[in-house]
Length: 233
Image (cartoon, rainbow, N blue to C red; front, side):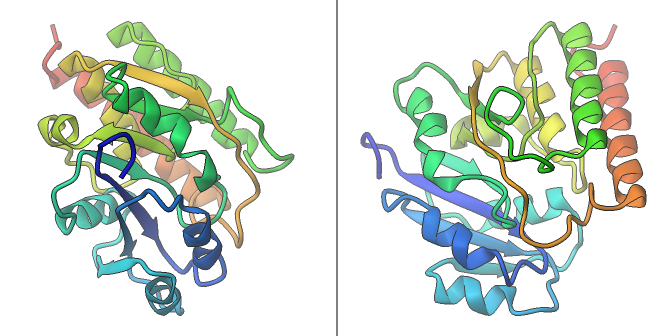
């Protein structure tokens, strides 16, 4: 608990046996509940996560959004949910910079921006940088809200998150949250966060096919919300 608020953490993971212990060891002691959403790992991710004190929930349906939704489904009552990746690219020790504005009542959603923070050389691929640049500018042009990043490290009030009725089960989860926050009139902030090379190879940005699929999904989700979302027309 921090500032009288119950804090929970959801960590989607797929074959992160080498990284997940380091991630869990960096999560602050004031986090009340850590859920690792095991998205069909075939290595020892689940066992290592349990040994590290996390509650592990199996989510066999592959997809980043599926894992996040699966993790949320088993959370007990909580005030703030933090999402971060299980590959050790995020710095969990910086979690306070995301949750404190929510605790203070200054925001509903806080995005950890890698673009505004310190990035280790090679941690963000050129396709990630371009994809962020394109997607955030489209969001600003359509919904008049300024983001610099679609980064996975983020915190949100649980009540606000429930109101967004998140549905994307793939790579579009982060941009869906940011678009729906804008549509719903939530107060969103960005805070600089550090970012380092992940442990192991990325399943998305580490391959051309993964990058293309992720980019296509993100752009199609933006188009869907622009054409058929609450503010369409």
